[in-house]
Amino acid sequence: MKTLLNTHHHGDHTGGNENIVNKGASVFAHKNARVRLLKSIDDNTKSSKKALPILTFSTELNLYFDTTQVLIFHPETAHTDGDAIIYFVEENVLHTGDVFFNSRYPYIDLDSGGSVIGAKKAIEHMLMLINAETQIIPGHGKRATKTDLEKTLAMYNTCIFRIENEINRGATQEDVSQNRALTEDLDGKFYTEGAFISPEKWRRTIYLSLTSE
Image (cartoon, rainbow, N blue to C red; front, side):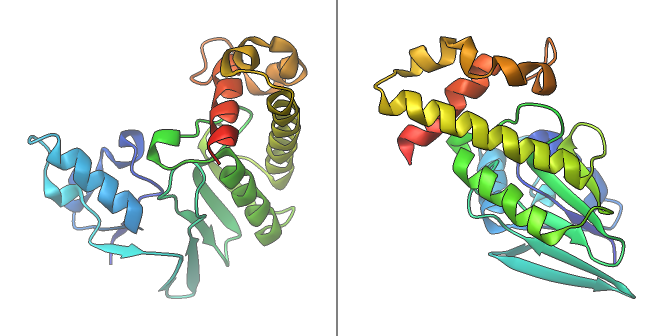
């Protein structure tokens, strides 16, 4: 059985669905990812429904291939509202999808149900599941280790704490997005020139996420 698991609905992770289905694979995904993929197909008549997952799950799914167990679980809200995190149990390999960007500020798709607090909780969940020997495949960035994931969690905690304090002091979205001091000690570790999520965009995302929850 050939299986393709979509970690979420974004095109850079699902754009090859139809080609892979044509090779005989079946697509699985979280139920919200299928809903969002279906909407994108409805909005684009050139797209084929072959790209859609044929099996969806709500909270957790286990797959078994010979001696290999694949544990798939869904964080309620993280990068989107339809994320799937995949753990190959015997191989001790974790695929995080876009819930984890290694050594980069992450993209939290607020318009697709994403949440900064939810993403932080998802990382905490992953850290409880793995150990120092786990090989981690991030959604973007180089292959990672538990230490890399811990660094990202520390970054979340620091940024959320600082921006939450600014919000409580009455700072506006523009105040926070333009306040470089809030992340300047982290920017060298999580941002390189030209990266998709700039420090300003990251600060703005945190502000918008915190004030909407």
